[in-house]
Every structure is written in structure tokens, then in C-alpha cells.
Length: 366
Image: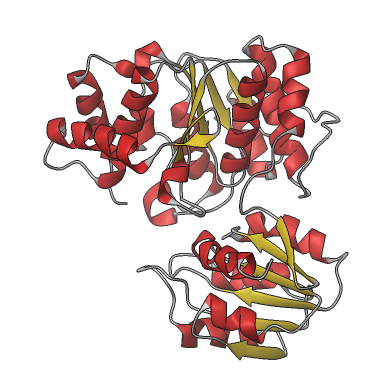
């Protein structure tokens, strides 16, 4: 197993006098639902009139959307100022993500945030974000197999990595877990949070679990119930069953990139008609598992290669699609695939890296 470390980020923070200790930090680990849960927490705290910073990854539409205060992205100039400061004191072996993590924590403290909602990049125990020395709340979302070369090849090993963010603080755990994951946390003495009637403004069969996790956590933090449910109602996570329309066509953009993450999309598509799926997948993702999850949801699929150094080749993606779909085409880009799609509903899915090009193409036709 490859080794990675929290030490470079901690060294940078220590050089600045531990700015993380000035913040009430909500730290979120898990396989699926981290981004949505972070959005729910953020909007709850905004509704409660607290100043809140939010750090999520990977990017959906824009690099700077990963770094927000009160739901608004940092400007390029402002964030680059903090990033430059972090690079000046960073150890030589620090990675880009480790430096970004320190920079955004410093930025939140300098900008006067009370809370910081911080999503793990990968795992938990050894993730750069776990350099944080003090937390108000640890949050564990839904867990499934992922990054097995780094985190371990069983659910129990991955749970141990995620549970590494629990450091002398209250904990809430999403109730949507496999039996093995649920048993792991129950054996540690933690209860899975219950579901609430949430009044959601977002689609997705698993979003009630994510919202309920944020509700439970917000109650522990002492947030007023009115603010909690106002925040839940105001949350619409980007790139997760995101609906757009143009020229009489319905578009659904979903960045789910593992089988469990694509289940809500598959559930949603049962109620749609005349569907074309545009699908791409990164090389380190379970392409067969992803395609099996959406198998039967549409008659037509267009394979594309993701605009990423980690992309699978177009030929490999198309070959995998042919195992599960009868009507298979390929396209050199997302835009080219959207040009080819001639159905009532068009779905772009398989990777967050596909969504920016899709949204830009749709936006020009609205």
C-alpha cells in the first residue's frame, strides 16, 4: 500500500501559528455524499447567520468553486494570494493538495470565518485535511470500496481509514451504509443517524440520508431548528442530478463516478423517457460496475473520453459500453456527443470532469 501523510500540511499550519484552531471545523469523510453533505451544512450555517468557509473537491465547474465563503467562491486573485503564502513556507515534499489544504484553512481564519466545512480529499486518517488539530464535528458519509490501492481492499479497512478523522469530537454517521460498514461503526460505539422528513429541493434517492446527517450534526452544534430546515431547503448541490433544459430537451448532469454514487441516477431515470446517456470514466474507476448500475436505464449511449490525464481511452470506453447497451456510438468530445444526441432526455454522467463542457454547451442554447 502506498503511503501518504498529513505532516506537510501540519508543518505549514504550524508556521502560521495554527490558524485551524481559530475555526469550528466540520470535517467530512466518506465515499459518496461528501459534497452534498458539505453543501447542506454550509447552507444551514448561512441560514443561522454564521460566517462559514467551505472546502470541497474535486472541482465541478471551476477550480475556485472548491473554496467558498458563505457559498461564494474566492476570486482567483484572492485565493492565489493565500496559495502563494502557503508555498513560501511549505516543505519541499508537499503535494499540491497538501498546500491547497493549508492555504484554504489559513484563508478561512484570516477572512474571519466562524465555521469551516472541510471535505476529505481521499480516505481520512492520512488525508491532508486530517492535519487539523481541533474539530467541532466529525462526519462519516456512505462508504463503499474505493481507492483500494491506498485505503485497503475491504470495507472494514476503508472504514478504518475514514474513521481516522474522529479525534476527540462529536461524530455523526450517515445511515446509508453497507451491512459491513454499519457493523464496523456500531462496534466502535457510534450510532447511525436517523432520517428526518427534510423538505428537500434536490433530487436523488440518497439525498435524504445526506440531509439527515447534516441535520443531526447541526443539532449537536446547537443550530436553531428553523435555520436547519431553511438551509436544507436552500441546498441544490451542483453536478448531482442537476437538471437543465434547452431547445425543448431535458438535460441531467451527474458526476457520480462509482456504482453506489450512480444508484440515485438510475432510480431517477426510471421515470424518464426517450433517453440518451453520454458516458465517460476515468482509468482508476470501476467502469463495468458503473455501466451495470445504469444498464437498462436508456436504449442509447454515447461513449466519450474524459478531459483528464487520468481518462480511459475512447476505444476502451466504447468497448465497455457495448457489453451493456445495444445502441452504442462514440464522440470525440462531450460537445460532439451532445450534438449527436437527438432524444427528449440527455444524461451526461460517469465523471465530474465531463460536466463543465456539457454545461457550457447547454448554456449557449438556453
